Length: 221
Image 1 (cartoon, rainbow, N blue to C red):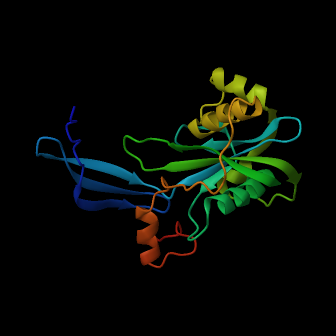
Image 2 (tube, rainbow, N blue to C red):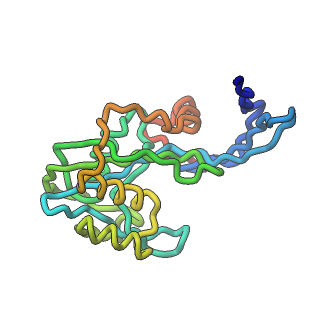
């Protein structure tokens, strides 16, 4: 039995609407099934990494950070943008773990990759699993990070906090529940060499071409 060919969605035109320090918004004209077209607004993003860092007592590093979008502090994993030109996902995760938790790790794996809001944003996040930890000096934070609180939370407690609605950050929820599967030996993490082909490229390529490197988020607006 032959299958009906699936429609191939093609972008006919793109218009840049907003170009802000850590995101941009563009409007694409996309072909639709039946011969028509539609406009789609896309939030461009650098992509990000997060880390589930598990110590010998099965505790994970968590940070409580103010998020102005919801007007409250949220419990999250150490995480950060992929906003440094040429920096790999692993190096970015290692840097963020030191900056936000004051921790290094000898063993690294990939837990999950996720698209946070596929209906309108291209943000993709790689969540790492880090073990064999060493405490190091944590640098002083800036802006919201100067108010950030670090806590070591048992993985069981973090899972319970997630199910009670106390942890609502989607990246943290994904990482915590995936880490539980690994610790309980129901799943295996992936090697860090697995390609992260979801990593967004549109904004990074444009900033690079405009000379905003190595820190691609520093722009005048």
